[in-house]
Length: 433
Image (tube, rainbow, N blue to C red; front, side, top):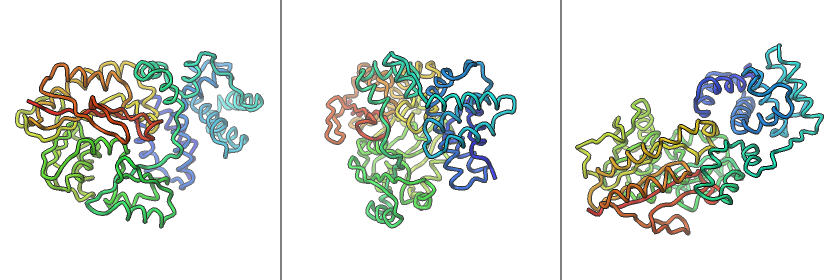
């Protein structure tokens, strides 16, 4: 039988060597391993937990280790991280088990060292002295690099930044968009109740249900095509786009397809949705998803959003640009995003602006253009939209409402501690000439 701690250690070592998405790593490992349900949960909790708390754990190591963190070999360092994570954040694992199991997966040369560090931490009653500076302390405690904290502070101010860094969802749930082509919200609610699965319905849309269960317990419902996974912010963005039956709509950066699916469902599967993406390999996900959901109005196309397509000119009633972004709004689900280089963020606004400017040419006069991201960074959001509107007098902002909030400038930012959703941004504009 596979050892969940050993698999978690291997995943952490791979993540350090090759940049990859944590969700893909987990899916790959679970599909290839022979873990019990309990051990699969432990593997996932360890790998995701250490990834989320990387800076915190390394800070603690620096306080208890005689060897600097950057001097440790990768295997020993990640084993220490695993041991400390269990001692600091997993109350149900006994201390002796956390230590002995961690030492057991270490290379022989470092077992004595790892054992000494972990036991020293326990003897000192797991005390940690954090930095005195407010932002350094929050950086360590939340395991958030300082450059991201600087982005949040410059975008939303100190108070909002502290709330963003300290926010933890009350429960980890799976957001399910109900496919009203096949079923109704009440039927899905009844099925979840029958299975004794805790849930709540989201007020912003009325057709998103958050199920508090492992995805394995609702996988059959998802495969039935009656629901698909979509966060409330992403769903609300499509609702604000306001697709209608018979329209012709372009989803310019569509993969993995959630917004295209929601758009087609809101159109009652009547009209045309063209879903484009730069990566041809990902388009099969949209085809497969549409088929499962019973949607037949979606066609896919390999297309760079920055490259002009003459036959698209002034062709669409609505165009959605959900552009590539830094992803800072979804670090709660994909914590590996936090550790990307700051350079990976710097050039994004120019790419985003180019996609928005190009795709705006595809909107009919009187039609609407929506810009969205899953980040919380004004440079990638408001600044991109304002620059576009300043240089394009053919478009004007469209007032939009999200819950009780009304935005006259046509822009709205979903902040997780307010909306309970992913961090997300939407802006809606109309072509007037």
